[in-house]
Image (cartoon, rainbow, N blue to C red):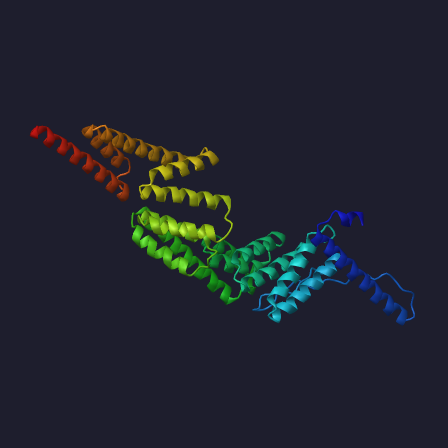
Length: 379
């Protein structure tokens, strides 16, 4: 009871289930012994089933061959109920049962990692059915950590990662699956690996096109890849936002960034990447003040980031030259204003919107200067 008090509610429930299972086992053993005319003996935990996996439905059937502790017996019961629910298309029930089994597998008296790997892989099958691919990939990674030779978990993880557009990790998982499956590797698995490798090459093509300056074709390629992924494919959609930026389609990039943020929690790295992209989009939209504030905030969080330093330095210089031009124009120092606007343009010559803004300001300064000269001549 003292040990149970220190457990979480889920773990305490698991312990209670295990205790009930153990009591049931003992009662059944005693009944059999009495029926045979022998003295009752304490029941031994039943042997685990041999580890194996199910068919196309995707649910593994389980075991490591050793005798089971009460908590392992209870976990196996949960897994069995989950298998039955999964086969009967009661997906929510299957998810609950597998989660209970996983919770039990984290207790100290659970000592069979290969069984725990099966529970994670089975829950991943549920997540795949629910199209919750990120959670499926995480469960498969946990399964492979517990049993690195569990090739069916590696395959399922690869399938989830393909939907997420994480082609490098997808190929790695499918290669592991082929390696560990050996001669047992089905033809479909090898075909999945070839398909993933094709997608990986297409992704590499996007980066090559960007490096060669062909952003429009890169955008076509990345959009084709994104169309085959789920909405959880954050990494690929962040790349799409970057390509939109290279195409000077800043409004579309901003909309995609906003959509990514609205869809759920992002890890810190992705959040920083999106903030940096947004700051770059603001520069491209000639909103230099807003961009400067965002870059300054990014640099406070990551003071050693060279990209942030470079972009902030340029944005500040653009803002300074633009401000000098505006001040000179107000003071009717028109020649000085025109020089400042020209210098501002030269800091980011490929920035179309900022260049247009500076050209307008320079033209306005020239027109005011011309009007001033004409007024002086008339006098």
